[in-house]
Length: 331
Image (cartoon, rainbow, N blue to C red; front, side, top):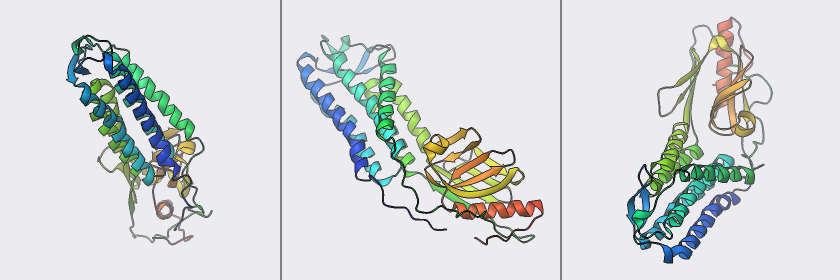
């Protein structure tokens, strides 16, 4: 069944919403740098070892373009991403959390160096890493607040118009359905976090950088999944890894349907989700295969062509139970 979406609401506002924090952070960094420049040593300490002692240095002239690039390059990536995805809230959450961590790190480098006799006298205190993560949490929360009510456009019609989809399968007949679903939003967000992590490590050490790299890796791994319906039931695997693999056997399935879901409201977010009475793999809002399980719970996987998958799954369940169905013939 084909469905169409209405015009993207606020599509021109999204890049502005994402880009403004990076411009503001760049302005703050530039102001702090210029105000404190007479008090900065030359060279400046930009990297610290595990005990907080400076072990990496850059000239005053190099710090300014380095700091601006550290903020504006990921900012530009997020702005491009804002043009190509409808995943407004996860995009803004990631963008705002990233600018919080990066902005804090580069401003603290200037502040820590200000007034030091030489760069080797500068020390990185232990509280600065938790402070950077706390700043990222606060700015990420601001991102959620400014996007409240901004969700993916609602489809003009439901994927399934109310009847239970079914596919007639004759004895001995075999059929399977498979579809790979990718999330551009999660994929580019993962790439952006990896770039940001690799950029920040030379400036602030491994603490915040490793956190960003780990988050980027998780975003990338969960940016694609393959769903398969066959005589074994429903199987969901990550596109990039053969394991872990989720399999729902036919004997556990009561029926399947296709419907639209909102990732945040219905499932509490993106990735592998476990909610009360419901679990599943959620890459985006929109069309999803919803499986009713024998224990009364639901399993959800977001995918295109969910109606066909539901019809085949119902046909396989009906044939396995000894009943025939001819409600619909989809393939």
